[in-house]
Length: 201
Figure 1 (cartoon, helix red, strand yellow):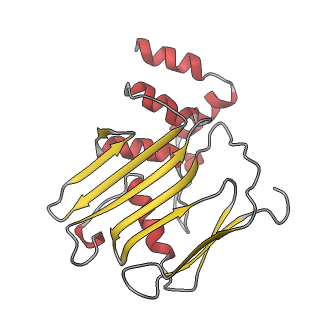
Figure 2 (cartoon, one colour):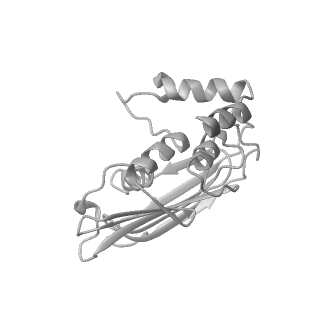
């Protein structure tokens, strides 16, 4: 990482219902993306908690999210967790709204794990992955990936390959045997053989 190159997101939710300040600044980092990494490009949040509508575009490389205590940083983490298959509840829906929607755009052009899952599910693959999840007060969860409906269980499986949300006392992905196998296959350029095995078994 070159010193001084970063993208920083600074925002505040002092007024309930909308973001009063949102900006992206700084120069983008190197455009190269690792074989086992995905890049979160855009995140849209609608009627989630105290957020009426919010859209963030991230730059390649390291992005820093800053804000004072109570600004709403944890709400965005909660929204991201929901789009990755986290547990949903009616309390997440903004007061007065009938549903909450989270949408995220990922760049997976060099993400072999996500590409393999889509191939296994016989879904069309491309450089971009668009996930949209809607939670309604009636308890319904709708998950759409690249225009096709999938289950929450499948979303959890896919989301586990895209993002690792780490916090104090939480488990780390490197301890997950399935993640270890993904890394070994990626390091050995074994993805074509892996897909062939999936096709036969």
